[in-house]
Length: 137
Image 1: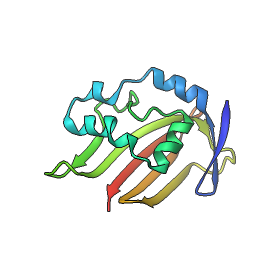
Image 2 (image 1 turned 90 degrees about the vertical axis):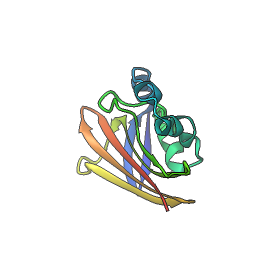
Image 3 (image 1 turned 60 degrees about the vertical axis):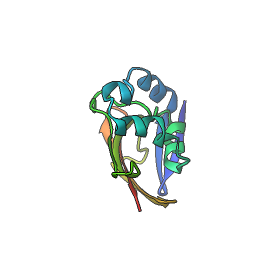
Image 4 (image 1 turned 135 degrees about the vertical axis):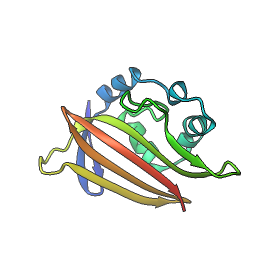
């Protein structure tokens, strides 16, 4: 089942079913790295009510999993009081840009105390890489 998502006014066609199937074959973040920051990201931070998390989940992404090409957990930084400061994570979806001329879409939003930057980049063979960066503002 494909759904066309509008990201920054640009269409992105996603096969949500195939994306969900893909994530069934991937490891959990906390299986790849048991550090406190990876556990925090996977078990708590991914449950933040952020629009990007909702969008990625509706595309079929399992936010608590790594893709095999990124087997070292998530890049998550917290300060000395364990407050979130920054994270960077890579996800992937099965899909394509329908207009052929687009190879990347940049999504930016400030939501609450977070600045969110996401790059959706064509990776060939109906794969779109998603580079997610979130900073506390």
